Every structure is written in structure tokens, then in C-alpha cells.
Image (cartoon, rainbow, N blue to C red; front, side, top):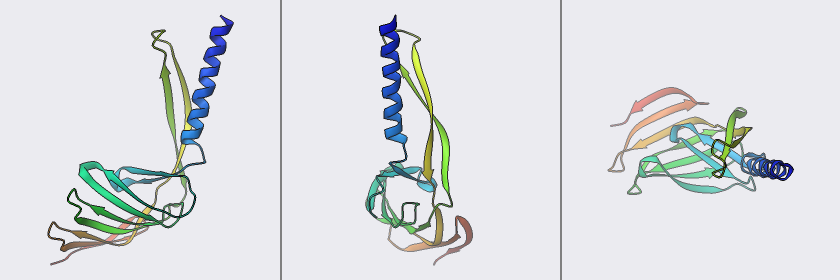
Length: 156
């Protein structure tokens, strides 16, 4: 009985340590609401990233600060530019609760649960965003100030 309890406590400790490594403060997370994408990086230096996102689109991020100031270009599946613009820094570090539940297949109904805090930055669209059609011609411009859409202009 004691060995079993000891194993469970060790398992829970490993889960919590893994959780801290995965969701701990050593990693910087930046969530881009418009793309439903989270950029995770080690925070060392300023970097450029590319990532596949939903709908066979690809975004290229030129990160300027760890709080999310960046320039972004979004390409379709044929690598045609469809939008580009900039983000300003997140106003604050945001947080939400996340659950971590593990199941032990050897003992049906036996599971361990832990809860943690997930911290992330959520930058805001800022400045002029340009949108392009399949012919690579700009068809719209949108002007944002710290995440608020101020003006939208259809270009002919």
C-alpha cells in the first residue's frame, strides 16, 4: 500500500514538473487571436518564425519584442501574400487556468489531476494592414490603433 502511494506521489511530482517545464515562465507564449495561433519560444534574442496555420495558410513572423511587437505576413497555400501588417506589444501578461489530467490504464477510473496557470501575451493589431487577392493586387486596407479597427478602405 505504501509503495503504491509512493509511486502515485512520484507520478504526480513528475506530472507537475513536466507541467511547469511546458507551461512555466521559461517559455514565452504569444497568442495571435486572428490566426488562432500560439507562438512559443525560449525568449533568447529576437527571431523570425514561420508556421502553418488553419486553412493551409502560412504566417511569417518577424518578432521585435518578447511581448509581441511584430510584423506579420500571411500567405495562402500557393505562397501568395494575402495580408500583412504589424502588431504592437500586449498591454499585459494574460493568464488562464489549464487542467492536466492523466489516466492509469491499469486501474480503470483512477486518474490524477492538476491545475496550473498558463501565461501568455496577446499583441494587438496596430497600424495599416494590407489585404491582397489571388492576383497579388491589394484590395483593402484597414487601420488599427492598439487592436481597435479605426478605418477600412476598399482599394480599386
